[in-house]
Amino acid sequence: MKLRKATYEDWKILLDWRNDPITRKNSFDQNKILEQTHKLWFNDSLLNPYREIYILEDNLTPVGSIRLDNILLNEYTLSWSIAPNQRGKGYGNKILELLLQNKTGKFIAEIKPENVASIKMVLKNGFKKINELKYIKKQ
Image 1: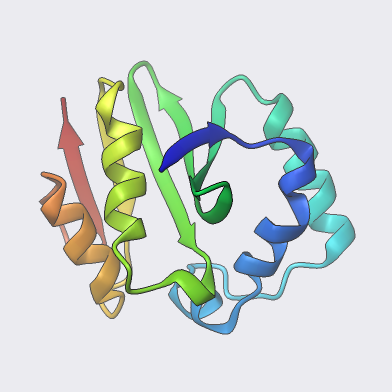
Image 2 (image 1 turned 90 degrees about the horizontal axis):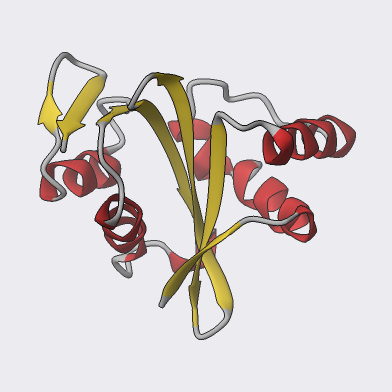
C-alpha cells in the first residue's frame, strides 16, 4: 500500500468518489459537483502551493484520497474520501496513518457527528475532540 501525490489524470475517479451519495451525505457541501467545475477546481488545487492531494493505492488500485490545506504556518485542515466499493476495509485509517507518518504540525478535521467511521478513524490516530464537529492533533 502506498500514498502518492495526485496527478491531473486522477480527476475522474476523484469526481466519481465525491459525487457518491454517501460521500455527499457526509460532506458539508452536499451539492453534486459538475464535471467542468471539478476539473477547474482540481487543476487549481494541483497548482496551489498550500494544498496537497494524495491517492492511496493498494496493489496499484486507487482506494482513497486525502487532502491537506495549509491554513496557517504548520496548521492544516484535512479532508478525505474512500472509494465507495472499498469502504469498511480499514483504508481510511491507513490513509490518515500514512499521511501523518512524515508530517508535523497541527491537523484539524471537521466531521459531522453522524459520520461515525471518520470519527473512529481520527480518534484511532490520536486526534482529540474539540467540539461537536472539530478534531485536532498536534505532532
